[in-house]
Structures are given as structure tokens and as C-alpha cells.
Image (cartoon, rainbow over all chains, first blue to last red; front, side, top):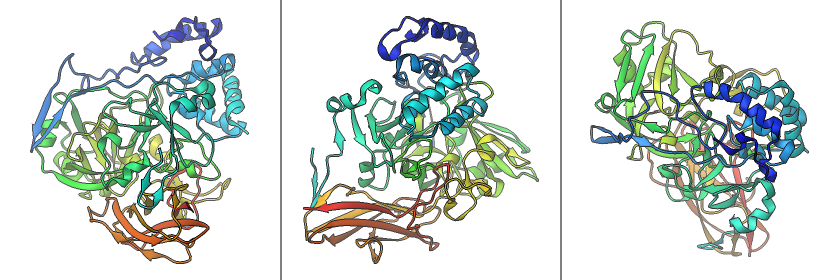
Length: 149
Length: 409
């Protein structure tokens, strides 16, 4: 289990309060219901797709016309960092890392607060990010404080 | 790490992790090999270089999950074919298969057809095949150069690549399934999925006539090898001359439609203004939009970049790559006087109309001041590159004439 789910992480950039830990724990059934995909921490499992999932250890190949295709079984690297900023990053860390890593957000151009609001709205309304309404303001505040002029 | 190439002295472009960490404070990444400064229009311009992704060599890390990996630009100086292990990577959703069993993988062809199919890879490999060199370029390649700035992946110019693709004609697959009268479009879906239920699965579609044009291909090989998983193994749709958004990866589902595709990725996302160069004024509203479609000509310097120094009065060899969009390259010209006059360059071997084409020439550096170089490509349809950058809110279809500014020493 990712360590910050335990609620006992206390370094500057990985600080999670008790409330956040409760939110995380409360979210676990939802997360686990998403096709068995554990997404909050250091890995994303392949979706459950029998056509794509080989038996353990299978290393098949198929050939034809002079071409051979070999099964692949790879691992993606740990997406790494949380959003920095301690308490101020709590909402964004709890809500946003399930779908995407932090890095690209922090390299976005400076956007106005209204533009950040519309980005967060897009994530909720179109991409169905399960962000609690009370967390939206904190997420927009965080983005505007770091990536607005 | 100064490099000298002929009479060109490269500016120090890379910087090492140790010196960079102080400036990065709390966002310090882990496992970066090194860092690179891109020529982006806003801070931060640095990115990590990483070799941590499977089947990939050193790439510019734009996002780790879902992966956005940019090709370091110097790769394009090494030839017109981009190595598979440094070919750019772009995924929309984080649920990407990490295992593919070639013995059980199936490609469905279904929908408005007489004979729905479920093909194995052996079935596909047994069909007549074609090969084609074609440029694969992200719709938002160079978005990081847009002014005013726009949100999205902040790519420099490296979200593109050129490969020799081998596969089967989509037309043959469709004929095999027997397209019914009244079909209007063909929709493509891959094995990637949204993390959250109810979010729009990534799917793209082409008009039926385009799908059946004999050039659109389902590829199983890239530069003579199977595709890296992150580039779409085992099967990827190849839509020569069109932006990469249509080149669906890990393709496992082809659906013939009897009505226009209204899915989010066609009807809402990846839309461009229906205006010349897909350009509008920042803030403009009320314009008609269409799905992004064919590519437009571009050309780049690959052996010099802004900040490099050249010796006054020296002969300088210049080279680069160009592509014509959905046509071949007719000519590439360069200017050393800010576009007042243009001189032709020599074109390298023609690998096909959808391929990168190398160009080269020599100039004599002036005695003093600065040297601003520009390159422009004209395709076989007579279409060139605009002198002024286009702008749209998606950061799509940049193809302005690029400039590099060298200093004289």
C-alpha cells in the first residue's frame, strides 16, 4: 500500500494529516471498485483484460511473412513525487494523483485563477475525477498560488 | 561539455543534476539521468531526462503518468528515421496494459459489417502487407512555444518522429469484414482505459472513404521491429499525413459506424478553428470548429540551435529535416536576412512523400553582429509555412517558419 495512505507520513512534502488519511481510507472502496485498479500510489496495474493478460511466465511469439512478434511484459516506473507544499497540497495530493502525476501540472504556464478553476472543472465534469466539492477551492487555491502571476 | 561541430560551437545545453537541485527545491524529481533546458516560452523550461521507461532510451520527461515523453532534438540530426527507443510517447489515460500476450491478443472488426471478425496476430501477419515511411506528429507538438501561453503538454519540437511502418491495409481488413451500404465512418479503440468509470474512453474515427483509401494501415512493425509497448504494441493505426491523435495505439477494436461519430474525442476534444492555419485571435469566440486533420509543412535546423556560436566569416554547414504535411517536400529554403531573401538547399534521399526529408546547405557567416537563420519548407502542392505563428486555444498545428539565432565569435 502506498505509504501516504497510512496517514503517518510526516516529511515536508509528504505530510498527510489525520483527516486526509481518513479521506483516503474512505476512498479505498471506490478505488478498489475501479476495475481492481490501484491507482493512488506507486503503481498502476494493467486492466483486467483476459485478451491482454498472459499466464504467468508466458513468453509466446507468433510469426508470419518473415515477421515475429513476441509477448511483452513490462513495468512502468514509479510516477514519483507528490505535490509539494505540506498542508496546502493536501487536497491536490488526495484528489489528483489517481489519474496523473504531479510533474506536468507544475510545468504548466502561468494561468489565471479563473483558468485554473476551469481546468479543475474539466477534470471533474468531463474526465469524471471524483473530487469532493469542498476540495475544489483548495485545489484551485494551490494551483493559483503556484502557477499564476 | 562544449561541443564543436565544424565551425559551430554549441552552447552548454545540458546541466547536471547536482547543480540543478538547489534551484528545484521541493519538486526535486527522483531518478533523473540529467536535465535539459527546452526553448519554451515560459518558466520552467527545464525538464528531466529519463531512461526509466521500458523499451525506451533517454527521453525528455514531460509527464510520468500517463507517460508523455519527448524526443531529444539532437536525435533528429542523426537521420530521417527516428529510433524506436527514442520515438516520442503520448498517452491520454493511465490504465495502459503492461502485458500483451501475442498468442491471445485479438483485433475485432465489427459494427456495420456483414461478417464481424476477431483476428489473431497470426491472421494479421498472414495478410498481404505494405510498408511506408511516415511522420507521426502530435497535434500539440511545439505547444510550449505558443504565445500567449496555453495549457496542456508543454512540448518543444520533439513530439514527432518518422518511422518505416509495415502492416496491412485497413481497406483489406474492412473488405474482409464486408462493409455494409450506408457506412459513414470507422472508429478505432485501443486497450488503454480511463482510470475513472464514466470518463470518456479514448477513441478516434475517420470517414469511411479515408479509411478505405489504401494508405491507412494497421502496423505491426516500426523500423523493422515490433513496436515498443509505449508506441502501441502490438498493433497501431497509421494515418499517413494526419496528426498522431488518429494513430490509435494498442489497437484492438475497429468499429464501422452508420452515423457520424459523436464520441468526446471527435466531437469536443482535438477540434481546431475552421480558419486559415487554424488560427484565431486570443480571446476570440464564435468561430466554427472541425476535428483536427491533415498535417502542414514544417522544417527545422538539426545541427545548430539558438545560442550556438560561429566564427565570423567562416563557412558554416547547415542541415536539418523537413516534411510536407500530407504531401511530399518540394523544396526547403533558408534565409540569413530575416526573410528578405531565400536560398534553396539540397534535399537528401526521398524516402516517400510522408517521410522526413533531410536538407543541407552551406553559408558564410557575416563578420559581425548576430546571425538569424530561418528555414522554410514548401510541399509538392505549393503549400508553405507562415511567417507569423498561428494561435488557437488548443495549442495545435504550429508550423511557423522557425528561427535560430547564432552569435559570432
